[in-house]
Image 1: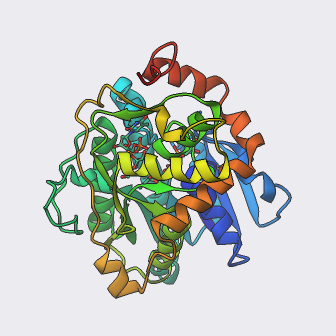
Image 2 (image 1 turned 120 degrees about the vertical axis):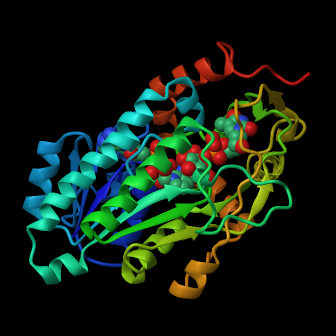
Image 3 (image 1 turned 30 degrees about the vertical axis):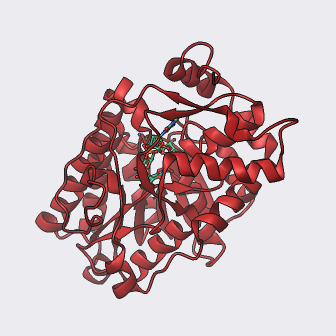
Length: 358
Ligand code: NAD
Ligand code: DAU
């Protein structure tokens, strides 16, 4: 079986669905169910005997030790983290606790358990650390895309915490021989994403008739990847990645934030038109994110060449599916936009939310 941390979050839950859709190999999920973790993301698998869900924190070493010795996973896929850049700017402490200390405690528990196993099991074992392209910092407009050899230059507390955890994972590979793998992926979008992130936030605000906030001039560039393509890449890395290696994963879909929001508005104009005018009339420029990275772009040549991975969705097909998913799951949206979401929107965009255009 495999052990998945953060499996109730956005990418982790998509990964669990993807995994159990292609194999009967069981999964144990450990997730602390922070504001971003949502049991509903896995509710369609609630009675599936292949899935065991455990609510718990990465920093609970006793729990980790018990789970690892009881289940003896052949692989750990480590998603659990605090993930929102804006939250890391307002409160970096939680990022240090979850991303750095949490990864450290997980590594220590895994090292102890792995060290007791027979040599063939040790050799077959994999620890896959799911990281981000943000550790590489920001690119100039015409600079080549990030490769696995790009130097780390994290600019936000979130990126710094991920970079720190990447270094810890690498060190456990080099020092203790733990068979580690690290992936650096670009921006994901798709089902089950908490609506603090740009794409689900804009879809939700548009449907509510609320303003659509663009930070600064909206000219920042991200390289977008449909989440299912990321999950497929992670499966390939687990299956065939070389121990100790890192792999960049990206969709080759660079778009400015303004282009992304305008694409969403065009799709919504067709699928859920406003009584008058276009959804794009709701776009407003709001104060920029401090230290905002201007551009990310991923060179995914290594994973293509070595592991034969290719994204299956274009930005256009993926974004259409994504809007369709949010429109088709009003109950899910309704549940996640209570409590923690409302508090966050008030804190980040002001008590009345982003000011209306004009
Ligand atoms: P998410 O915020 O949707 O989910 C994170 C999950 O981790 C939640 O279910 C949360 O409850 C859990 N968690 C947080 N702290 C925990 C702790 N201390 N112990 C146990 N569980 C804890 O995040 P996501 O967008 O699905 O990202 C998953 C991973 O992928 C992260 O490591 C992130 O850095 C990485 N990543 C994300 C993207 C992206 O675009 N979203 C891109 C590249 C890499
Ligand atoms: O690149 C991978 C990273 O992508 C992951 O490691 C992070 O966990 C994930 O959150 C994401 O980070 P970003 O900061 O790029 O994602 P976010 O959706 O927050 O923002 C995308 C872009 O849109 C970014 O340039 C900021 C901008 N933005 C975001 C919000 C929430 C806006 O213009 N307005 C907004 O209201």
